[in-house]
Length: 604
Image (cartoon, rainbow, N blue to C red; front, side, top):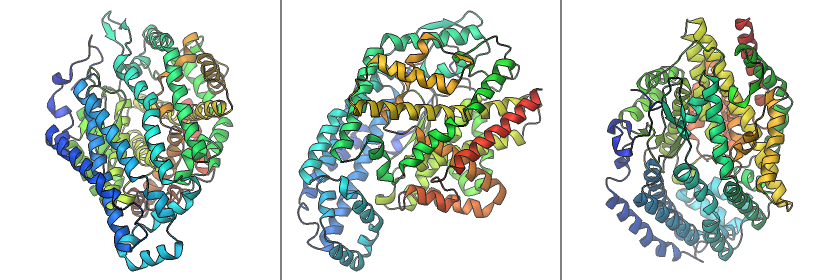
């Protein structure tokens, strides 16, 4: 199988081979089945209302309400997940746009209808709750949840306020929705010519490959074309990001947090110092990044190095074009340290069409793993035949298995996990892939290529995401302090950080300052820092897996099954890494330095 990188236009969804699409019929056999469950959820909502004001009357009432609550949210999760996956297949398909909007509206209604529960649960006297917990094994399963509710109590509003807030947030979420439509469906990039004079339609999926091209002219034209396109829409993108930041700050204020960052980290019990120490530790080691860019400049024989020069491999005469079928086998073998059960799970994902592989017109950009409790998880890709996509595949499979093991090991109440630990599961897979490739590649040039790729990936996951995290926090604080998030302000803030992180030698062009507009993660509420912390934890855990064997594997599998049965920091401690310390971040940076030194030595 080959990628679509050379074609003039992307194929329509109907032209994609069936075996390379996900089989969502595993969730709902037909759209009519989805409609049936939609009506079931609607019919269940009046039943949950009957428990309002009665949760503390008896343990029987309490467990009945909790069970119904979980049933509604399980079904709602499946409805929403199916709808957004269908919509992501082709964001121009109006039928699935409508389905996705209906699912979002129903979800908001569900949140509104069940919003009485949290305030009412918090009103149950502790001594009475202890009686309920002790007399009912079913209720006792919710003990950690009740502990969490007690911790969250200062930030929970009354039943009426929670219901109103749920409705407000549906409207306030329009910035994120509109950004997705503009960025995925409406925005159009120009065509450029490849090295053979053939037209290439720039797309989100192809952009990364174009920036890796050994032809500097192609890299520059692609970079400038994309940057100029975002510049043309900068006022719209600034307005959308402004709306997103205002929403986050509004929620923080309503829930009595000091900042949007505290509001984002507090529910998972992540100390804010974890965020700050990430930025501080990375900032104190930026000389390593400058060193890498200096090596790249020399290896590529450049008089000056620009942002569009940062992606190509410094080993220009090596091609590691890997087809999807080849990548599947490489990934499967690289995960052997986890044991046969883990590998069998991966094979099942392959065999049962739980991956949507190729890019098509209107398809959501990027890659992700998604799923709903009670249904098997899926993966979306926009495959290109390069090593970067091999890493993307193993990354998303890490999420996929994590979700599967959590949901098959935990009840609904603990069947989710925080984003903080999610990126550990995915990035550990990447670390094992790097180790496998270096050990199973005898060609020295390809070893150099893999080392470079690892360093490039580290830069993107740790240094770059930390820069994003610093930008995200700075604009939230600015808005909180009454600063208008105009295009000029956003561009200036972003340019300051680009200057800091890229250092004195990397040349920033005029369109570089608009890059913030193309980053979808700024609509995900303090998400990006977890890529960097996750990579650091994964570095430590992968080292343990390779050196200790079975004891480390056993701890790791328990980590994958834990879900939200404990706090993320505690779950990671049990797996073998303490993220309240700077040590994992510094250790990861030490690995970067060691491999950078190795690459410098081999090249010299």
